[in-house]
Image (tube, rainbow, N blue to C red; front, top):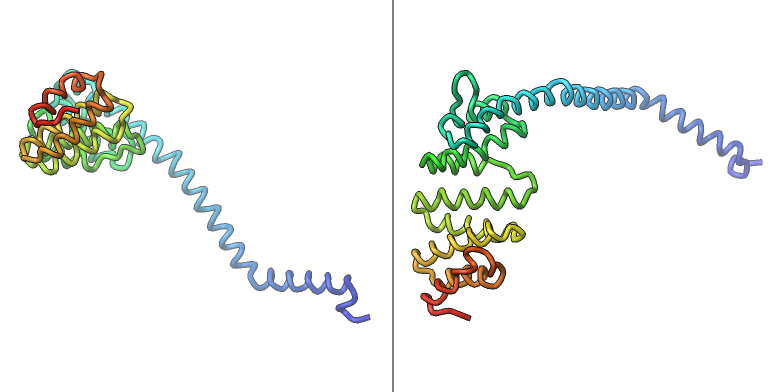
Length: 225
């Protein structure tokens, strides 16, 4: 009986081939497996013993700065006082942590309140909203404010439009930034763009503060529907 017609011999040949492959590549397979185990173990150790404590410490040091921010003590919030770090220290000391990222948002708004508009832009543009459309809209609005203060109206309008459309569920915020964008469009002589933004407020957010007054602005541009 030939090997082809003998299932037992065919199976044995397959086993022999598998054994041959294992003997040939076993060291490489073992090395790769060990490497994967080391990498996974190293990552878990890094996450548990380095990243987590660093994040915890960063959050603790952020606490006092947040308290100063809530009291409108923006300079203290930024720079710290009495040994307690401010937002800028948290950013430089704990880069890569969620707390440092949040500190950028606080720092950007603090700079804005202090009239340090370019510094505000620098911090806000580095902040990551991490998938939160509401926070992203807020950041876009703050950027619009900073650019508007620097008289960079084109940039301001772009950010106001973005802030007014990213999270329509917050009607008060959306209508406010659309309104600011509309005003700047008027100043820039872009009346059609202003009408477009005002009309969005009228159509989508009629019961907001800006919704109640937007007809006046549409009327002065000759467009009341």
